[in-house]
Image 1 (cartoon, rainbow, N blue to C red):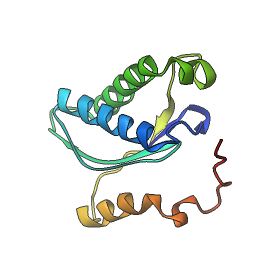
Image 2: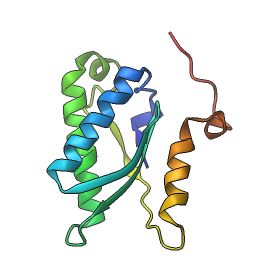
Image 3: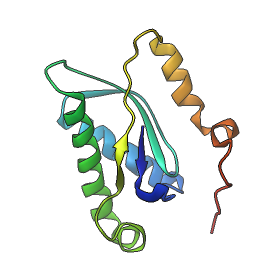
Length: 129
């Protein structure tokens, strides 16, 4: 789970969501990462990924975040100027957990259900322009 800096709502149209998905798939392919499941929300991304044990989790996250930010902000200078003038699309923090006792299916179902209204519980409604 990665959030945008300041929780800015950035991926607010289907085109921007699909573009970020394509960018993340591209970065994943470059670094031998398999994206099992992914959901891009307006201000964060959930992914179920797998990668070879020779890579560290920290380096995998760093590759995904830095590569996707560089490409996305280059493609959208207007978004960079309006929301990310310092050049940082993602917040410094992220959450990564291992499957451990959870089955892969449970995690896949959780990620797939992020677009439901339940996933926005406790959050103010997104303002559309």
